[in-house]
Image 1: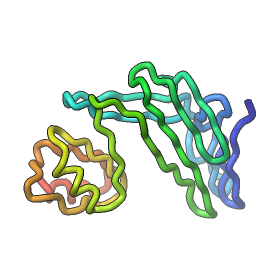
Image 2: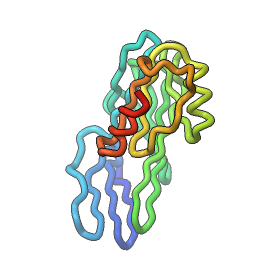
Image 3: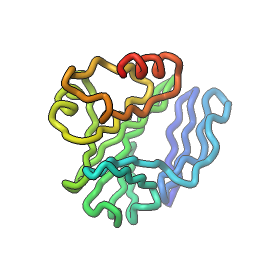
Image 4: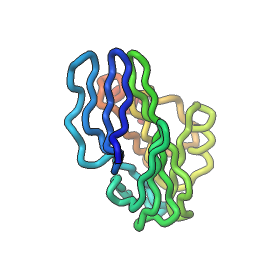
Length: 167
């Protein structure tokens, strides 16, 4: 299967057509990443509170169509579908993730606004893994017990300070 290539005048991203793994990424001629044997890792928080880490190799089927990478047939979580949408402009390569088919004993939710985050924290019981990346931590509901919130952040001084301030 042919490799998948995204290119602009400043960016070149080359993915394996067989697995979706990053083979090379360059910005204005500079190599950005080492080639990866796994195309991604996906962290699920089970209702029991245990974490489950999935890798691209945990999926038996990979398909690509245009800028969409689709992984299916995961033995560890039957019915799970993981899609990655890739876009790039002159400055950035963006990866947007979408998960569907998650079984009732796992909780996965992507929220893209403070209102949706607030609703998810109020609605869900038990521990919550907050994968917020480089985004600032937004104020959380007063009734949210900080002991059950586990933020996964980019380790910048601002993000660590915000986590400490939030409790």
